[in-house]
Amino acid sequence: MPGLLNDTVCLVTGAGGGLGRAYAKLFAAEGAAVVVNDLGGARDGAATSESAAQAVVDEIVAAGGRAIANTSDVSTDEGAAAAIAAAIDGFGDLNVLVNNAGILRDKTLLKLDEEAFDSVMRVHVKSTFFCTQKFAKHRVSKGGGGRIVNTTSVSGMLGNFGQANYAAAKAAIYGFTRTSSIELQKHRISVNCIAPSATTRMTEDLPMFANVDTLTPDHVAPAVLFLASELCGEKTGWVLAAAGARMYAFRVVETAGRFKEETGGVWSPEEISEHWDSIIKL
Image (cartoon, rainbow, N blue to C red; front, side, top):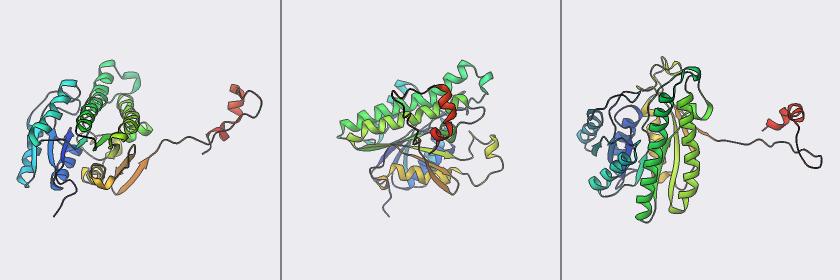
């Protein structure tokens, strides 16, 4: 039976467990050749191990699929290049990129130090930038076409207590996705975001995921498959969110606003205060 990703080569970063593992396995089941990238570290980024990526590859191969492991650090320019090269060398091309790699270093703002902030920004934002740029250059060299799925979050779109660094990184990825979708559209490269809510090693001890068994990676994976497949069509620049049985989208909207009618149109702070409700009304 034809799969949605037949004759497609996909790179999934951070695919050694949780959401990335679910994406990689579903992609392979749908006919894709998959590069499983993962450093194999703890959720805070500490330590590394080749076993995580290889374990997912072994699962895929045992089920009759095609996959290879890659343990490059995609938050570096060299590591991202190595991951892209692994796909091209291993399977001859690269058609789909899923930027999923990430870590958590949760601390409240008053306790957050520079190292915890920088490390989260580096793994989430720099890996997305490096991999996206190198993937796009490859696709342009092949005449265009291709699909990128980035990863934002509810924290990035709405904020969340104790996650100033993580929310900043995920909000940055939203802005990066919007801009790259505009720039790459002429090359027929779609760039969209997934905002997943799922219980994984990354989230299992967060209050919002406590005692919840309906928010699984398997609920999110079909949304990423849709964004990676031809079913997505020309849709680009979107944030698709998946939380259990609920599928929805995030959009940044502007209110209708209010015009100052007097000549000059310069608002005073007092006038802003007086008309606040009409300024923010949708």
